[in-house]
Length: 313
Image 1: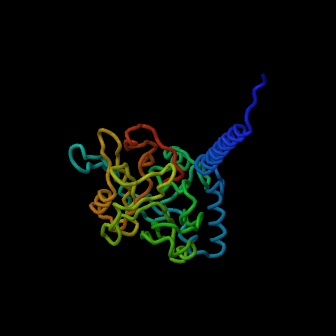
Image 2 (image 1 turned 45 degrees about the vertical axis):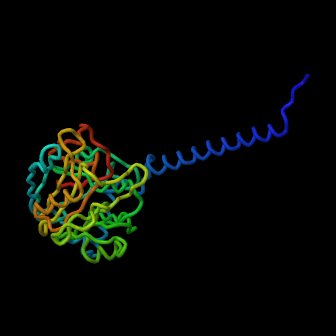
Image 3 (image 1 turned 135 degrees about the vertical axis):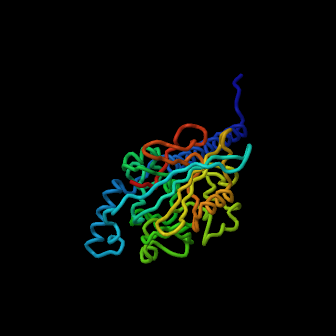
């Protein structure tokens, strides 16, 4: 006797196979999107240093006010690095402070991983520092993780898509926190912007700790979770025009608990910062001096590749 499969069973089997195929295709599509968004390099501008030099030359020829401040440094910045301990017992953590006085704020520069601007382009902070000959550097805002924000670096606008509270450093040596969504790169240049940073939140404004920083979430999507709680931290603060502090807080280890955002703000105020801004932290938090990483690197001993640094020659 020949057995037969009923038409109804055929339909059920075909429906199951179709459903499985849809699931497989969906997973493949999501995986492809995730790889493209978070893994594959997307270079928008290669040889960024040459690009900046070319624009500076063009601006100088046109008499740009930004170009007029990008002259040769008249003296080297004064950099003093110290370490401190915040908290006691199991809550204690070490943090490093670079107190820097600039002769001209254009001595503070930004550099991109692999000298290229775009998404997912990364390099260890110490390697980026070595590439540009930095005597001092900290990690930046990891702009390459996201597609939004106003990113002005070394007097050049690389991205102009306001999305959050940012920080702007002006050519007169002052710094301010601002709402990116209420302005644009052209208006910032008109006010004398030299550099912007887009991560956050703002920690200190007009000498006061900003309200609500213990509630802020930054880019809480795939691969970048809550920035609250005790974490390694990186921050930049202005004491006065051309006088800055760069802070890196250790954390995520038995020896160092890390700091909350309110605690980081307290540290910045204690250092005399009248304006302060939170940069990318966690495993990214890195301070480099004379080619050596001086902080604890989240207890792992390994650097996390990032998209950018702030540096001094």
